Amino acid sequence: MRARGRALAVTRLPRPAALEASPRPPSQPHRAFGSSRFSSLRSRTADFPPFDFTKRERRGRVWVGLALAAATMALAVTEAAADTKEPEKGEDPKRIGEEINEHKAEAEAASRKDSKKRSLKKRKTSVRDGNVVVSTAAVRGDRPYMEDTSFVSPCKRYAAVYDGHGGSAVSQYLRNQLYAMIAPELSQLDQEVIAERNGEKDVTTKSARRQRVSTMLRDAVHKLDQEVQAKGEWRFQGSTAVGVLLFDDVIYSVNVGDSRAVLSRSGNVVELTRDHKPNDPQEQARIESLGGNVRWYGYVDAQGEPIEPYGAYRVNGNLAVARAIGDRDARPFVNGEAEVRQYDLEYDKDEFIVIASDGLWDVFTSSEVVTFVQDVMSGELGGREAWSSGGHSDTRVPIFEWSQQYTSDRSMIKAARRRRKVQIAKYLVQEALFRGTSDNISVIVVWLR
Image 1 (cartoon, rainbow, N blue to C red):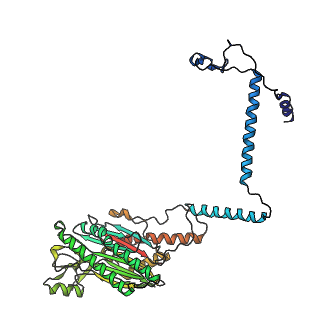
Image 2 (cartoon, rainbow, N blue to C red):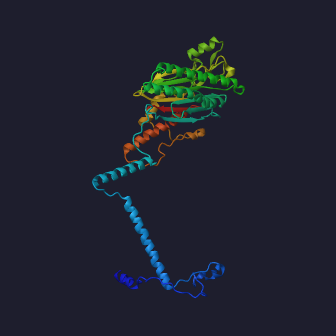
Image 3 (cartoon, rainbow, N blue to C red):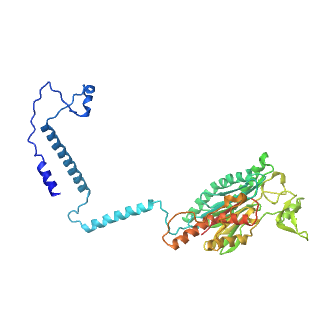
């Protein structure tokens, strides 16, 4: 290295003296390319005469370029120095360092906030926090067509299942229209709740709002029932409807038909709806008072008693429900009157709500559904994740299908529990298929905490 440095020192060119204009014969052309491979371009660039600098001029131009580069670097250093805050007279350098550290901390916090990596911190998922976890699943079963539909509002405060029969047109119509019909009035009620909490006067009382919500739900179903009956092409079609609305610390249930909603409260079952089956004492009395009849169609034992679920009670030998939206040909024995109920939310006790069509309830009791969900969440059951046969291949549910790395067993357990919450509706569908249901199945599970 030293020898190389001495060699460079020896061959370093001396600083040139002041440049002097050297005369050039007027007949000598200026050449920019000299004898390079571009010399052949001279004939093509006759309009742009090249330059041929002398050795002294070239050396001078090199020094000028170096001087310009040095000036540019000096300017950059000056600007960088200007950006650095120097302690002024009377300022504490320690305080300046603290401010710099604060800015760094703010920048790091913003970077973490913008990161798309999943955080394993505890998430609030209670209805009180407005961040409700909802699990949904549906399967055609052994039926040739899927006539069930389900709906969950964007804010997750309303969820419903519609079980169509004779086709899926009516159930799809209800899915698209029912919540859209009540949403504007719910927005007005939201404003009243906010005004009441802000202490404003002349606001509707909570009891009056409860009555208003119940009437709103009942009227919406009645209006849709009239619209469906007015459509001649849907004369032989209909649908059940079961929905749950969470509003102002109250659970509202609306039901027409034999779909069902149940609540788990401190591990106990609360049936939010009543099945409108033809053999229900209240429904059977109404049908027979109108001149209709209710009979069992299916298998019977040696004593002639029905063997459930291998058959159904039917109205006049036709529908297996006492109430439905539509079914104009079955009126007045089958009506579309909605039953609305209210339940106060108990945040420390209420756990989840299961809303499902009769494809689930034909093979599950309400107590069995609540127990099954509790067992899955406790880890005693993992769902039939390997179940796949016949027309049920769409119900396969891999439990662990993500590739996230977890930092501890505790974080993995939390993630697995949340995973079960999201998949619980599919586990219920799988278990119903395993138990032998052949109907369409639609399930919604709303987690309240």
